[in-house]
Length: 538
Image 1 (tube, rainbow, N blue to C red):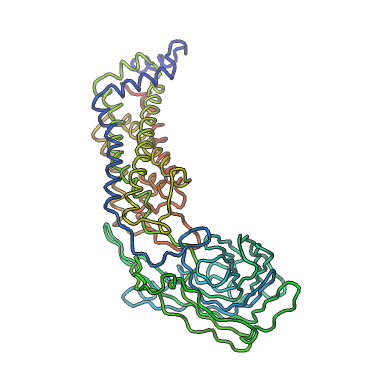
Image 2: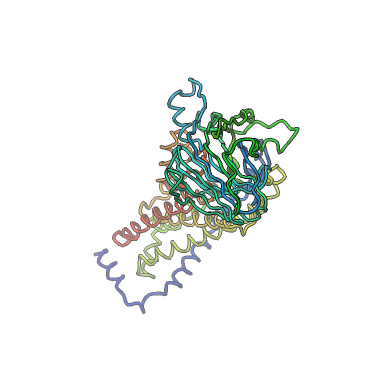
């Protein structure tokens, strides 16, 4: 009989129901008039700000081994072996890469052959042709290269990477300059050429240096992982490349010949460790002991050139995401928000007040939807306000602690990544609030619901640090904790290997993907709650 009465009530004409706006106003009045709930909601932003300030005050940056910046101000590394000659105006440089060999050693205690395969899979060794604005580290450039396992690539100014044909040595490569436009080509036989891509290098001077180059970065791999800490292993590598018949053809002039040293080719190493001349290089924060020794000089044998290279040409990223770090108070604030969201519905169940609510507003699903919108909106406002406040407060603290450009660039609230982290944090808190309300509607038990939500969000963070990386990553991906990946602001580059540990937020490549996970939890649980509230007694 009761269920029948509820269904009949839900079919009342619209004129007998309060408007949805009035229903939301009624639910907002309930929420703000309960003193304990108000206190808890006011405590949430305080916790977010307090934890953020404490985190910022106790944070210190890692050791800085080089402050080198690229053309756009990005923190970069720029070390490679370069055989070059000047090119004035437009022209083309061509060579055949006969072979490339990656050389490194792995101690037996580090895993032997298994770890060696990890190094080979991780390292982006590079051998190819470059056009560069002189020999200064960090200067503008464009380069076409062979990268074992990743084919031919066209890269420029450290951050641009264009994938070309899936070819390796032996192969022919060519770079053509037309003003500030650089075009790259690849050929299997030196006769038929396939385009790799085209880039624009603004500010490239009239006279540039062009020629073959080799770079071979140090492989940084996860060596040991325990609860709360990781240890990285570093494996320096060298790459030996053999070039055949490197030739330079300026526009309107004949080729320069076979590429013998007497033809004007010069042998240099571009080395970013020289940026701080006279200062011993600081140990790498990952456990390295300083830069590698300089490679041996280039060796010519007729028109064949053998180059050995070390180092890398790539952007660098800091080990600490200062924006995400200062927003960690979101975890503390959400506990208060979760408690209020759950009590917002379970308290009415416990006291029987929900029957009165349903009598005044017979549309049960409309009532639950109004509650969800109200608690979600309140959580969003709290998250947004607290996130803006904590970042403004902690910015000068972080600067005083040494988090300075170029490693940690200056930022403003209007920067796209910072804005996304702020709005995303607020949206995640709103989604968690709706999820908590819906789960409370289904379970009807405040303590059990609050505990379940907190466990689903916090426990994966703790377990992920002790599980194998793949297992920890999937645990984070499949739980509501994935939502906080939206706070990530460190740029990621496909051509730069990185150490990915899930407890640090390395879960999804796209920050919005994690937010989609928590939204899916909220929507599915809300759908179940709407179904349950329609079929169960209040």
